[in-house]
Length: 319
Picture 1 (cartoon, rainbow, N blue to C red):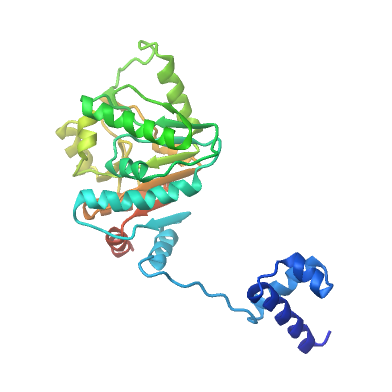
Picture 2 (spheres, rainbow, N blue to C red):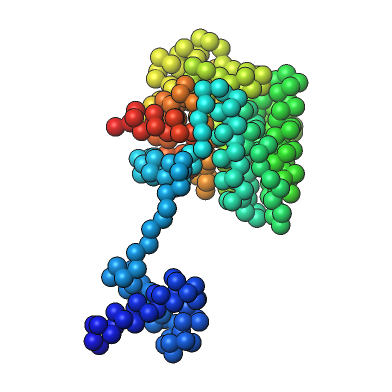
């Protein structure tokens, strides 16, 4: 086939597709060629650079920074919020808006969603979400225990109730302390509901987690009663712990740091999270940079949602 006329046909096909907005079937009928041929011609238009596709970089989108973080930590996705702030309340709001939009696009029928109830950022994300119609058969599971003061309990109830109302889901609370003694006897509780929730941990398809810093515990975690003694925190720091997910501690390289044998955490483990199809971490702030780097190095996280300043510090502080 004469190359000139072949390229002429490729250009004509590409023009009809990209400039005239005809679909492949319409082009097939118009040019009297098969739809498969149309598809091949469009592929050649790109390969031969007859057509060049460019994507406009939206101001403030941080696309390059997101790609760097994904490449560095082998993430599926990274979402950077529009703004940062040194004010924690404003920062949580910025992260919450970014996370809400992301969640609205990825929740599917049949999902079993695991969510820690003790995160200000997660609460902001859920509060910023809009109702999602036409979703069915969704379960929402509390993935870390906690029975602290009344305001903390109200927070957990609000968070799970809010998200289940938005997605037409069924909620499963975990009404038990997040930290118990080593000799704690589950069978003595004789609580079938808790057994159901613990069993659901292994079936979670979408986990929403926060990242805690070993040096700064959020007010909600404190209110939940999920605070280890200072002696134990100091021991973890000496062993290199920089942060936690669901009170599962790790060092800057993502290696797990186990708590004392005196205690047991009632929540999803890092091993269970690794088996989860999609784990989304929502975290930001200068005081959490090392904790986030450690969390990313655990290979547990699939998607990170953070703010611009934190993202820049993450890249600056990794080799």
